[in-house]
Amino acid sequence: MRIAYLLMTGMVFLQVSGGSAQDGRGAVNGAETGTQNILSFGADRSGRTDSSAAFEKLMRKVGNDRHIKIVLPPGSYRLNSRVVLRAAGNNSYYGLHLQGAGENVTELIVDNAAGGVAFEGRSISRLSVIVSDLAIVAARSDAGTALSFDIPNPGVENMRQFNVRNVSIRGTRFDQGFFNRGVYVRNAWYALLRNVNITQQYEGGLGVDKYAMEYGFLLEDCYSPSIIDCRVANGRYGLVQRARKTFPEDGIIRGSYFVGNVECIVLDFNKSDGGWAEPGFHIDNCHINYRDRGIVVRGLRQANISQSLFYCHDRSGTRWFRNEFAEVPGGDEKNRREYEPRDIDLDLSSDIIINNNIFTEPANSGRVGVRIGPQAGHILISANQFNMSGVAIKNESREPSYATGNIFTGRPGWHQALTTYQDVAGSLRHYDFKVDSEKEKNR
Image 1 (spheres, helix red, strand yellow):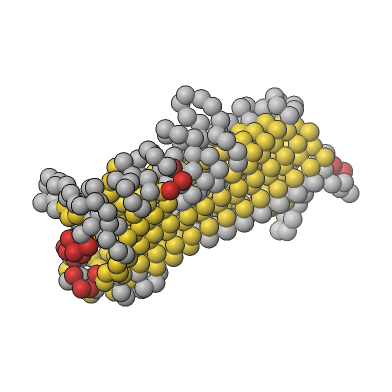
Image 2: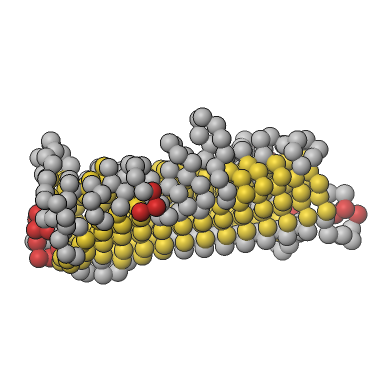
């Protein structure tokens, strides 16, 4: 049975999935801010019994309150049904804070296929939702979406915020339990995701040839999000920000780790009706460990990618590591996976600065450090270190791009299997440091 309770003016209710829905309707104008402890409503913090009903009782008690904090003391709270909060109406601001006692001190144990906690809205833009200081734990495989915020796009856009901080999303063990999506956000304005740690299964080669989770972070039509000090491991996609109905524009990804993902960061702003997103985007001080592609940029101009570490975990065909795609260690070219891994893949991109990064370690010899696609151009690649195997910079565009002050060496000598430039279109201008050996000059 699906149960709904009144939460605020207009139509706001908590819904436990299953059966049919009922809408709660209330009076005009909200009550004062209140703090509610989930234990006061019968929640079981031992994790043995379902605590979904405690959230239902809490919402019924809150009634018309527009501004509430739900406190989750230390413990484990089992959710056999996804908790859904819905809101409508803009006659006053709405604020909700779901707060635990600390990352991995308060746990929501998700044992259903729909997911953990979802915030949904209709005809509302004046709201702020905060989730902090807890863990959302998958007690099963394919546990849906751990945390979601799905709001339509009417009214005053810069008044709908979604902030998540100090949250861990994981399975019950390193080899047990995973979510299909970690965090899904739609139509938030200046969304802030700080210290969100999404770790999925890594048993049995996950992250190399297989993966458990589809998305770590999935953001759709979100204006200028900030992803700060976060970590995502072993997903198909670490982070995707994409356009659906609007140009999301801008954004910052800083100090974050994307490790063991097939593709780490995908910025896809190219809508089907054409056009370019407004500038710009910043990615800096990140750790990018990928199988197929590290950073993909599509439909963006004026962006910076800087001070980050890139390496590829497709090691097929290399002699430096145990060949994970062959039966014997050592590896050779005939055992190389027929794929071109790309650390930075610039598709529909312009006016991008790539500087002060390190591209390191041997990998699939088809690897490309920076690929400038046919629809990209006016790229500046400077002051980077390429100590890797494969091709450092590959240009396929007729538009001019520039490489200057990069170095193509390091220790250990992984650059011995490196080609510095592959200028297919002949429009890449490069100015290198002088080198001593004829071998390096002619590389």
